[in-house]
Amino acid sequence: MIYIEQPPFLPWLGFCEALIACTSIALYDDVQFVERGWQNRNRIKTANGISWITVPVARNTSQLIRDTRIADGFDATTMVKTIRLAYGRSPYADEALQVIEPPLSAGHQWLADLNVALITEIATALGSRASLLLTSCMSATGSYDKTERLARICAAADERDLWAGSGTRKYLDTTALARNGITVTWNEYASRHPRYAQPWVKQGFAPALSVIDAACSIGWAGVSAMLRAGLNDYRTTAPTGDAQ
Image (cartoon, helix red, strand yellow):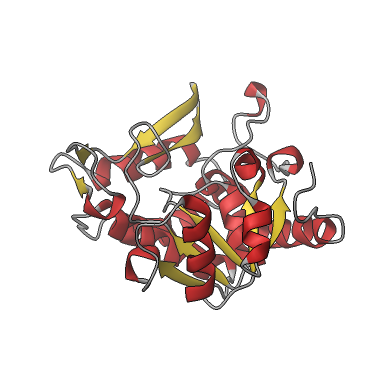
């Protein structure tokens, strides 16, 4: 099974579940960088509510993700301090930061390199065995329409089952994929987002934050166990094909 997504920065739990569910993760790095997207920012929970942490980038017109350079003003030390301030009282903050601080502080010049390094360390912490692939390094996946390119990415990874987020229902042509021998399994994650012991309890539970929130709260082993339990429950009912 393969999951295909633009490489996210400090991804949310839905992406992390894919790291466990799938044998291959194709990081779509040769598509256009989207301003105010998830490639260079994500959300954490602080004493003052939900806050964005952002990697500033040097912008050019219509640049690809793989060609997006991290701005000279990026201060990894300040970002780590911001995360530590938000989660300093959480029981697993030190453990969580031990995983993400090295790639954050490694001096990466390119956003895709930073995100791949972070995802690699997070995957290891979660016990994922998925292969991380860059679409820019795949052969024969160039200028095709969206559905044909997805089919070619699957073929290049030698995968025949696509783990697809429910948000792609609006445009994913499952009939065309089926003609290419690709079965779609829908990942309805947002509607089954797990709850855990989050910090700043009086604010209420906030879903869809960066995985660092859960890692600080319940530890990497706790996140892995939570994701695996939810995945095991969901697999038996997961809709496939063109189910609505």
